[in-house]
Length: 471
Image (cartoon, rainbow, N blue to C red; front, top):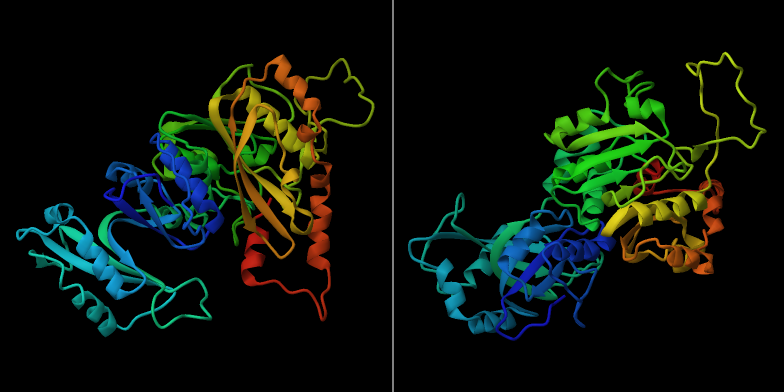
């Protein structure tokens, strides 16, 4: 990947985690957009590769990206690269010495790490590779514990673990600039969270969604299907004020049966506010309330900088809304309302997404983003199934595979128009009609699970875990 720049432009190497591969490029573009920067893939760009070359950026841009990304592991100022050790040496000798000098001073300390992707090297082999860099004009002393500067030799042995070559496909050498935020995945794991539910969003995906939405400090972020507030936790980490609604009274108030093993009932302080308190972001908690997403409760106008949500799919959480197909009967005259329990009815997926997009068009600020999950039956999927709205532009569409036959796609949209009368008239266009095929997702999901193939149906442990986390 590269921005247009000259031959002498400073380049950076981004080392990416090899999970959530489909989400990496949209995350990088969103984080660069927060800096007012754009990037376009070059002809040689390989999206699946764990190494991306960037140019046309300032070091401050790179540090800003790494301060938020959970897809990126580390970033380096790239001094040289090549397909062989000889090409690497030639590339390093061509690198401007004036750019190296500040980091090679006699009074400074340094260390060199060796990283290999898809291959493990013996310790002696790593030492040999470091010794081969002896032609570089290092003047300082080696310090393995607390060096002033860290350098890294990175070797790419391809993506196929069953066909590892003897020699790397490509070699890079550069100065370490910053690490990504992979630690957030561990520190915010739902396994350690105070309040969780059956479908609490994975921490890594929650932060990815917040990054795709370009959530930043002082934004107001809303989740209309808030559940146990995993997305609010991620957004508040970046300094955004957060709020949400959900139709489930027990979840909003943190009462009823617990989701944890060996715990029957939820404790007195198991709620969304307690989750934010756990991570030191309670000051960004606006509030949550019991509300039906199909019924408007907000005043008209642009209210939110981002809307981030994971609607229910009808698998582990029901798709319900208030209302009844029965004839409405007036309550008795002496009815006080104290014992009223709302009647619910089916809320079809096509209606959920149509309502969600329409809500976003009316209540997002201009340029604000909507990020949500769309469940898909893979054998029938095509891009025309993604819901559209004349006021919203699709920014990215990323797939997370759940099983051989199902997946969910993370859709990111940006508001580009206000929902004026002439725009809403375009909703009659067939492109903006709700896709009714989504309504049968539940039936197709379970038919795929029970379908026999030969001696029986089997799923990998990864597929099983993914299926447990869907709504």
